[in-house]
Every structure is written in structure tokens, then in C-alpha cells.
Image (cartoon, rainbow, N blue to C red; front, top):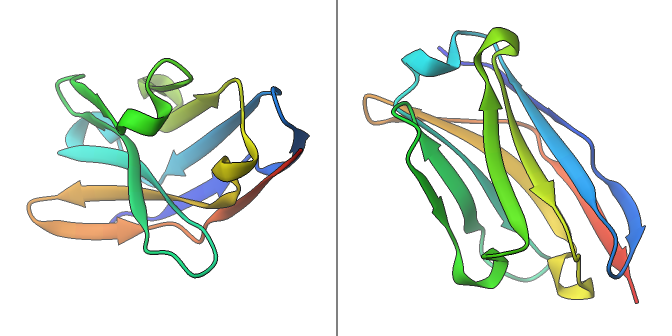
Length: 115
């Protein structure tokens, strides 16, 4: 079982930055993969970025060059640094952990980007 808690969302102007945090209840290096997803109103949840236990990262095309996923093993926390934010980045951002085929989700954190 993995319990995930997101934080760091908020309201920011276009062009600004936010850093989201996802604190895990267990050692993150023991979790196969962790990622950030987002869901805007009326849209499906979509992958933003992911990182494997080996450190391999993957990004959606729409965030490449703007967002960076990272992790701190000592804090069992995964981060999403978001720069050059756009109004279309407005969504609820969710942290997901996948371990041996089982998915665990956090409760989500709202990110709102004003124009």
C-alpha cells in the first residue's frame, strides 16, 4: 500500500512558476514508477511527467522544456517544477505511484493559471 499526499498548488499568473510536491508513505525508490497527471474540467486525466525507480523520466510533449520531475529519496518526495505556466495548464494535478501493476493516487492539488 502506498499513500500519497500532494501539495504546492495555487493561483499563479501566466509565465509564473509553481513546485508541486508528492509525499509518499514508503521509500520511493521501492516504487516502480511515480508520475504526475492532470485533469482539467470536462477533460480526461492525462500524463504530465513520470519517473521510474531507476530515474528514467518521461514528459508529455506539451510540458517539455517547461516542467521538470525530480525526487528526493531522503524525503520520500517527488516534485514537479513547473515554469512558464500557461492558462491551459490550469487543472487538478494528481500524483500517481505504480507498483507491481497496482496504481495509487493522491487526492490532487489545484493549479490555476490566470492570463
